[in-house]
Length: 175
Image: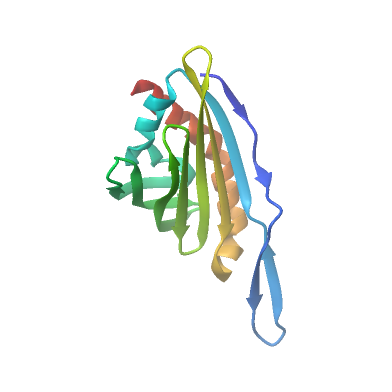
């Protein structure tokens, strides 16, 4: 398995939170984006099939448990609920597939009370009989508490992102 990293990348858009009180002010938090690519010794079709198993997503971005998975009639994973921990803070959330183009693209929206984002997984055929998998995670704070803890959460996610994608790659190759 060949690995290379392209992230973390700070995105150029900012989320502004208006805080009230005796002296109102705004707090802006930039969303973070982490991208990692890996070569898989399998076909895009086999990789795609493994991405449809909810357990595959356990471990990414601090996810500790995945449950209540749902599927589209064609077998594509349509969503799941999860429990995660990032920066010593527990999160419960939902993940919903918002775009799927088998076997090359899967975009999942992730939503918790304090952090939201997307996971984009791209699969491209490579020689011989392999697949280049690129996974990008874009997250941003939601709400005032989310903005306060966002730097800690982002560091926690970013520090383990490449290792988490390597784990997904190993799972795909074993399938």
